[in-house]
Image (cartoon, rainbow, N blue to C red; front, top):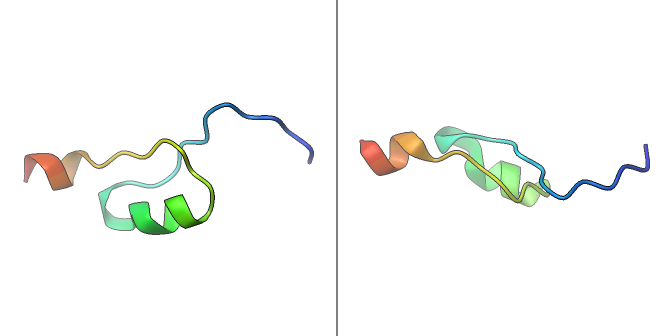
Length: 35
């Protein structure tokens, strides 16, 4: 679908690199910061 999104949130600490490769511009990395 042709969808215009301002933010695309995908991924978490364990897979944020893949999420970024796939186009995410908002990821959750809480465990990496607080561990």
